[in-house]
Image 1: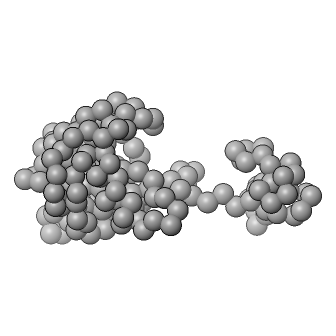
Image 2: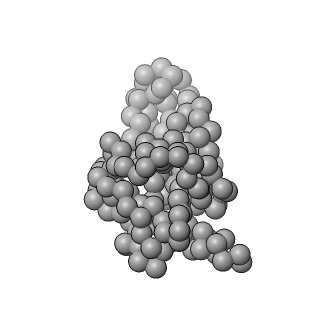
Image 3: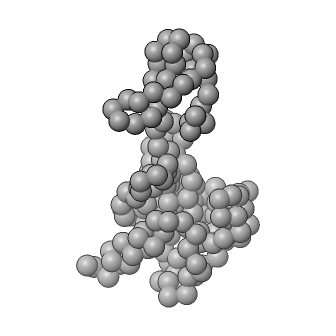
Length: 165
């Protein structure tokens, strides 16, 4: 079975694969429950100040030790915007105000949907949070290699917005 879920969340029965609407899905023969695996939603934030972008050196996998934009998962019941601001504060110590949505980014076979925002600093001094190793400002023309599949598109969309196109 390709699903990480092996037992029915309703009755505890062992799941089997079943073709539903042309896709193989976990199915419980005991109670008939079909499992639809939902994508996970994450927020990523580009914080700009004086033509520099704030980045964090990741302290957790994936991309441990690589420089990335502040980001993280949205908790159930939390607004995406609140999650974006929370993640920036947790990772960098900065309180930000979102300036706008850059876009939504997804891909076939990629289980995470990203909501990308740009933000301005309201308060705080940059410091590394518990799940990052370091926080640093980078000139936009001198960014380190970006670790995630959608980062290039997110950066391009932000640059297009900055240039007024």
